Amino acid sequence: MNPSLSTHVLIVGAGPTGLTLACDLARRGVACRIVHKTLTHFAGSRGKGVQPRSLEVFDDLGVIDAVMAAGAPYPPIRAYDGGAVLGEWVMFERREPTPDVPYPNILLLGQWRTEEILRARLAEHGVRVELATELTGFEQDGDGVTATLVHAGEAERVRVGYLVGADGGRSLVRRALGVGFQGETMEADRALVGDVRADGLDRDRWHAWPKARGGPIALCPLPGTDRFQILVPVHGEEAPDLTVEAVQRLFQERTGRADVRLHDASWLSLYRPSVRMVDRYRVGRVFLAGDAAHVHPAAGGQGLNTGIQDAYNLGWKLGQVLAGAPDALLDTYEEERLPVAAAVLGITSTLHRRAAEGSPGALQRGAETQQLGITYRGSSLARGAPGTPVRVMSGDRAADAPCHDAAGVPVRLFDVFRGPHFTLVAFGAAHADTVARVNARYGPAVRAQAVVRPGEPAGRLALVDTRGHARAGYDVDGDALVLVRPDGHIGWLAAPGTPGQLDDHLRSLGAAG
Image 1 (tube, rainbow, N blue to C red):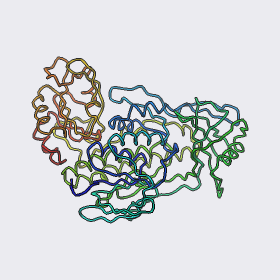
Image 2: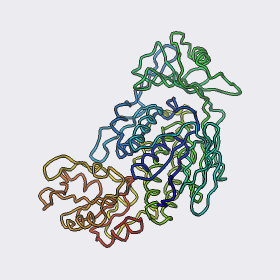
Image 3: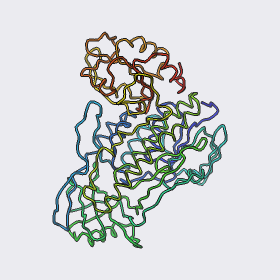
Image 4: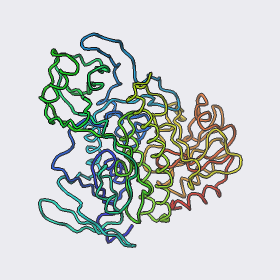
């Protein structure tokens, strides 16, 4: 790190993407600032679905208990024609946790609450969001970025190592870089969306009027509040007032339900679904993340979650480079995340089109939206050695598994992964010396953990693969070494593997040893 800089990373935008990145950097000891141009924090639900993979990120960041306590399962959808009930169905099929997937279901949680939880975690690391602070410009050179921030009419010039634009679909950072934002905005599919109180409806159902005049209307109860998120289509040149009175009038006219009273809106917005993405995630020392890099239709609950994954991918790489790793490591952020954004855009576009066309099953969701299958196979960071498993490869998500320690206490692999370090999972008692050597040589940067079968010789720090779930999760039969990156993806895998091979890979990532 450059000791002359008081701030190594400036994050512009304090939505879920920016906050996730700030939390990840702060826990690594990276000096960062996060600024947001509005006077107050966002008060609406907007992105309200937290996917299973994002829940795993929140587990790693130490906020999973707060998130699970604040959220709730998605309720069944009850469809009406006026006041007559047409039927009920479930959008997301409920799944039971499995050894490798502890959080198998999407969680309903208003975006404002997700952000509140992340801000609280960030404050525990000594960092707070700087509200009413706007980035107005920046210049970069080979050594850093000079940014201009304006707060209360006063301009501040700040010198930082890197700048990250997490400032939304209208990103100033993206526009200043001259990066294109190709795609389309679907003006014909505009909608009023907001959070309101609704008298006359129970909170056990997601209420929908699919046959409403002018298009489907829906009211989804938001957990931990007395509000519903409402969505009302807007067509043609119609420009409704963003008031709860206007929403009430449209709702009653289109559904015929005079017995439902909408009032006390905390947030209302005119939503225009867009399908757009950049062709570059990095320009020198400036990066784009979240909606600044890709915007999605709301269908499938992907936008917020894809931004969280952007931040999770970028955070550890910035930390490594600031600690001395080669700068080329930062190029893999675009290499790995741009194809993911393109694939997710394809998913959300298809789901949006099906819903607009009223296709059968258009509102049902499967595994394709959970983001558990996202892989970085083929990335320049995804490396292996002869004899590596075929079903599980470098770049894949690192699976969880229940084990127990020498005292019989249950320990999950996710417990071992939790934190900003790399994790070496060493299968087989033959690797006992490797584990000791790695822990002694790399210290807190790499945590080595032996995993043995029941009955195999094991030191007091080894984990016992009680029912074989760890070996099954990684498709390992004999001895093997698996290096898990700080973002929970497999970075290197070899069977049986040698310490020398591992050292070569860690050296390329700048891990001290």
